[in-house]
Image (cartoon, rainbow, N blue to C red; front, side, top):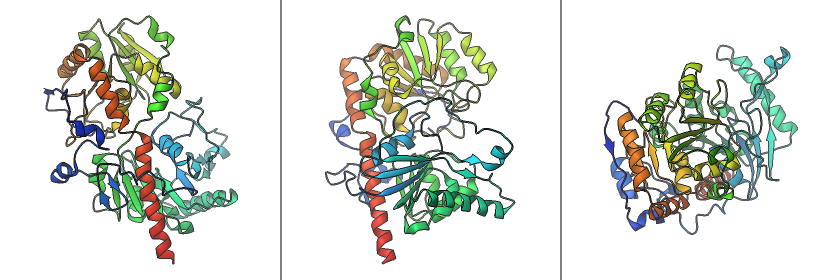
Length: 438
């Protein structure tokens, strides 16, 4: 979602797409993407192909011990990290390293702050184990503090007697694990990182870098040995599991309903949400996700929160367990993604779009990857007025046939397919590492 806001006009999403769209893993053909300089989703390591071949099913990675370094608590909201791990756990053993405790804070008597005060989900397969390591605070000025901190982390891994066959890190601060255990080090980046120096070191040392957005892919080109592009997917089964249960808060809400599911923080355009609510007083505007200051995603400032609460047709429902999200989305008439397109951490990812499409809902968003072809029934609105107009059009034009097209598209973009491709890349890294060792 790395778009710019100054140009304000509206372009409708195409209602009909070619039949071949649904048979591909991605939105644009290789020829189109190469002409535009867009990365393709590769298969079998170096080959570029937008379709997932019958042989590329992730079966090449099995019975491996994988160390995954996350950036959020495992039991926080189900994000890309957890979805990737859940798929890897089907055929491998995974140790998931959660955000670390600072020894200095513990010695001062400060209990560790948890972004997730209660579990958002209860997913923990038997092949998944968790570790929350102790670590000293990061210090660029004192290299010995960094080295001691790294030694402490390594000691905790040795204590667990976990020797990984591969290290998969979503966190750029663990480049010191590259080259350990003769295991390939894979850096999977899903967001802009605040520490450019740490990320630059990780890009240099990683055996494979996976970028989740086109913005990140273009940013990393020429800076790492092996770079791949893998957009987010969707867990359709999880969304459909409870989709037929109408949440109690939604029963009395008048339709039509425009809804958003996700963290409600400074990257959300609250002014746009207010304008939509004021322009369409008949519209129930539902926001599902944490919004309090300091909650997951940062939360909203008190002033912004007060303005939203002051409008009678805006309903802030707060965080909900992940298994209930499908029920809320299914109660929407249109899914909205009203992000601040100028926010530095806003990148387009398919995850939220696919969540709405998986349940047959039209989508109106403020931004989209500039070179991508729109999925069916997704509209990009490049101004506040255009956003309001697009929501109205989506509500009147969507029908059963359109909902079927949305679901069909989402079925081609599951996390199972995405991680199958990732598994092939990792298996190739392991094979190359073995060759180098021999």
